[in-house]
Image (cartoon, rainbow, N blue to C red):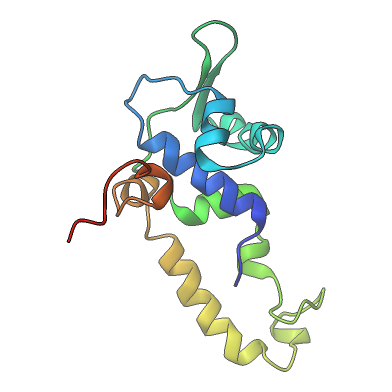
Length: 148
């Protein structure tokens, strides 16, 4: 399963925000620059997490966006459901509109247990755990990693 571009960008933004100090507001433009993402697209993508109560936003001087409390309770599966709906857990591997036990495609029986295992696994990663994992390249710019 490949994640949609919207899911990837939203996930990157939420991890970025989860790594910020608790009450630190981040300007969307600054976050977009740091992540190398289109600013207007990122501004659109952070709206659903804000409506879900995961983000606090403020306009004007000193404004921006920050993660609300709850990085421990938001799972990777929650984020994917927010960005892609339940397509992540219900979509047919071959792209057929109807692919359930009664109307199964040729790969349905093989894909169903894999999809369930994947879903269970995605639900096991919290945003806090993802944010505390190894630093990606966009957070380590400027550090010298070539010491021999």
